[in-house]
Image 1 (cartoon, one colour):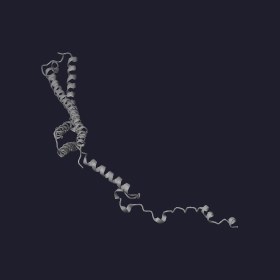
Image 2 (cartoon, one colour; image 1 turned 135 degrees about the horizontal axis):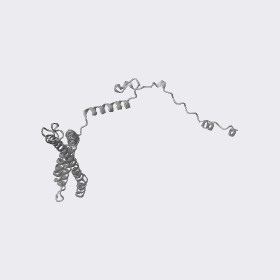
Image 3 (cartoon, one colour; image 1 turned 60 degrees about the horizontal axis):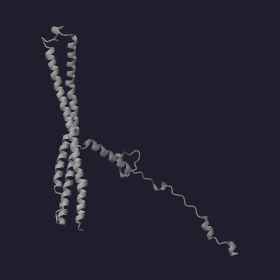
Image 4 (spheres, helix red, strand yellow; image 1 turned 180 degrees about the horizontal axis):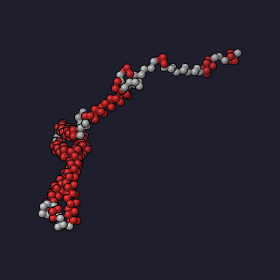
Length: 248
């Protein structure tokens, strides 16, 4: 049956509005979200690296200026500077040393988050999918096409290209969050064990993994109690008995 041009145009508008444009909006939001998260994490990592370098440099500079030979807080020249001044410098050096050790730890935590969530990789996937979706959108049918069959073929190519881009994006994204094999094997074993328990009525001494047809609980027919016979209806027997009064 040949489809009218108006119906083909209506299908194109529905597909374009609720599939292609919605998917493009989703890609744009995903790119913005992942780019923002990746940028923030990279900025925090760079900040911790900068603080680490500044702490180590400042601590070394203070030691070089105030605690080396011939300086104010050198033990050889004790009493040249107030004890409170040198004590304050020692506290500052200790704090800077702690910062130079702790800052890389915090930076490594954010590096682990970046490797775990893979914002940069997801951004590249969504950007590539958005570009391919733009190519598929360029194949959309035009109302100026005079022949209905050509319009229908163009519409099918446009729809197939859009769905192919979406499928490729979903498969790439799924590979980045693949379930560990050990967890998948454990879930599979548990499902098989539950299925075997449901399929068979097992005896207590039979394990679920050893479930076979022979492990079904079979009840002999002789042990099955039969239901009692229904009572006879006395009214029917009385109706069949002739009335002696009428006969007389």
